[in-house]
Image 1 (spheres, rainbow, N blue to C red):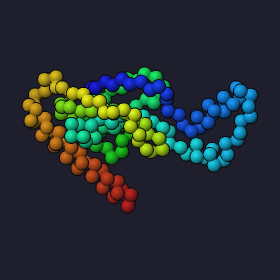
Image 2: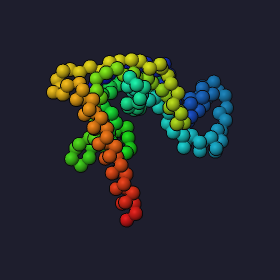
Image 3: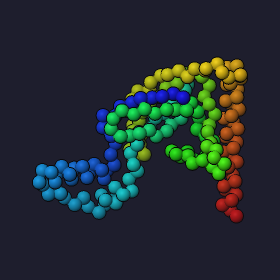
Image 4: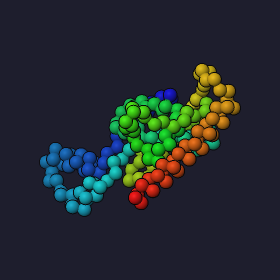
Length: 178
């Protein structure tokens, strides 16, 4: 896989965490703590937790993979498995294994040039934190397929994945009508 290291000067905080931090400062200074109001508390309760997202793109600028990474303050190291997303219609952070212990995975990328970038996601909006950083995925020459055949195989796997996704969606639709 590809391993990335990054540093966050400040971690991301939810609205409630930021409010509690401010309230703690007021208590420490001996000042009164105002009630935030029911509307603000309800907004905090329904708030989507802010996150840091890593986006991997290929040489053509197409998104290959987007996944959440640690968002706390400090130094972090994450690994990308050099794969496209699984063909499942829904992507989950921690994909549970199925009843046979199999964890669905997407096809491997073809060696080439890629970029990685970090963004923060707050209230569903992605804001870039870094410029895309270039890196190269190289083959270890352990594969039996020549480069041209690997590209054709990836194209086939993508088409098969689209077909599988469409079939899963249709089965879900039919099951919902029964």
